[in-house]
Amino acid sequence: MRSIWNGAISFGLVSIPIKLVNATENHSIHFRQIHLADGGRIRYRKVCELDEEEVQGGEIGKAYEDADGTMIPITDEDLAQLPLPTAKTIEIVAFVPADQIDPLQMDAAYYLSANGVPAAKPYTLLREALKRSNKVAVAKYALRGRERLGMLRVVDDVIAMHGLLWPDEIRAPEGVAPDGDVTVRDAELDLADALMDTLGEVDMDSLHDDYREAVEELIAAKASGETVRPAESGDTGGGKVIDLIAALENSVQAAKKSRGEAGDGAEGDGEMADVHPIKKTSGKPSASGKSSAQTTKKSSAAAKKSPSKSAPKSTSTTKKATAKKTTKTAAKKQTSSRGGTGAKKTASSRKRASA
Image 1 (cartoon, rainbow, N blue to C red):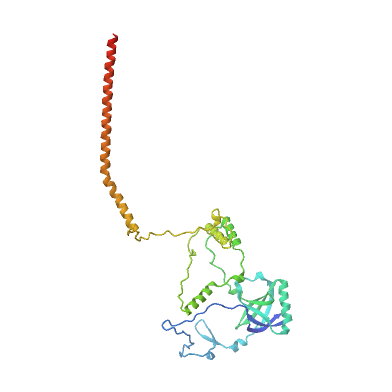
Image 2: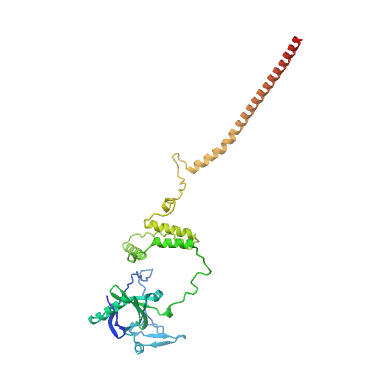
């Protein structure tokens, strides 16, 4: 790996020659600006505001812009004369526990490589001392024209340095926390703990940039002239008011399902039911050449017409049945009345005969 800075680590009276190497690399995909009309690339040229002429790099210097807009030129010679003891030195100022470093201060990361054979012994000494103490070293160094703060720690068998922001460069989190008093119930905390336990740990090496891969596939498809199909975007439910308990429970079940574990739900071991959309009536003609909608309309029309035609028949039938019942009732009354008169006459005849 190519070094970006050469200097030494100042460890008390011990000086360790080192080379500074970038520990990270940027894999982001960069785009160029083009003219949409003809695809020509758009470039930026450095032009002087006074004479409106393009200026080459060798003609460009530095200046500080004052509050009133005045430009104060600053040369490299001016900066070189400043008393900067860390210009070529990483000066260790303290050794502290790692948890005293706020992660908000973390900046760029570098590897420190021993520069030459004589540097191997003191380099190894510092590395082993850091390992045994379980501490990190806080140091000051200068890079790209300014003094910076750094933290030295051991990664495998290498000393790594993290650039740190100065304490006054960290903003206080004012006005960021939710407004008002928010109460969290024990049941919600229990479900949150269950979700954390279900998700468990992850192998950091298995994580990758899905978006970058999608962009690379898009570029490859367009370069080969293939048709690019739009990706399906799932509804994340952002901005919706949700039932927190239900959301946590569903999250636990989904996490268990993704890990191949059985859920704790009573129905189907917590598995989610498949939802199928209701099929709409197509309205296509049936075998008889009529659509289902037309058949439905005719059926309802026939149902409406049928009662009106059959109503008179049913009424006349009812009247006839009523007349028959009336006739029979009358006949019974006549018969009973005749039978009663005959019985009275027979009784009177029997009385006379006995007398």
